[in-house]
Image (cartoon, rainbow, N blue to C red):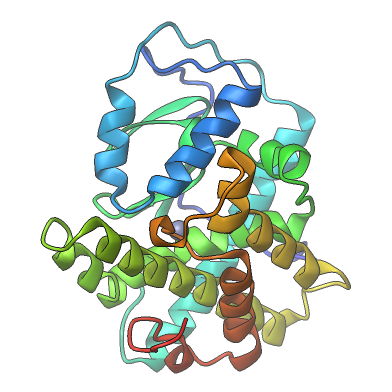
Length: 283
Ligand SMILES: [Zn+2]
């Protein structure tokens, strides 16, 4: 992936060194991975999730100086965010709309958000209440080392997926999920969540296509990197890793195959009208 010529987004706030007072301190390793999996399985309402997170334990948070690798990652996420700003401004214009750019916060270990307090264990997420994408760059180490999905385009896909949630928020596409919350069974809520997540994957693919049409930024192997990331964070793959079995009714993000397929659909079609995951019968 080549984004060298692109400037960095101005909408990024770096909160890595500001500490954060009390927070949930998790040893890395297994605790974190289990938490990531559990949280991903829960999916759905980040607010509820984050409120839960906020009630757990506490302790001082120390912030280590950022490594050279982290600085590279920070530049990467800022450039990717800038790319999404340009692509989505263009797409919204086509739809007769104006794109309001989301904000991004890079944090370390824990963060206060418009959706409550959050810990790194939840992985990157989008909070609709403050239209902000939150990411702890240590997630990329997990993605590479524990999930076996390295590569800059895999990293970009993660950002594009979260920005996809912002696009859904702005276009009102997430409304069916919000309206159903608390009024349908857990199983139905999960099914809606899967549709929302697969649409965010579709929108990530659409972004990649549009940026590539503009600047041929993709390099050989990039799409495979994103596919690998989509594969390893599919609900079935995560469940198998966490519990050794797969329970489709509890899916909130979609299977590996579905996630890869909807990303590719966005990438290949480049047409936002093809991404209506809420009205198709078969996902
Ligand atoms: Zn998502």
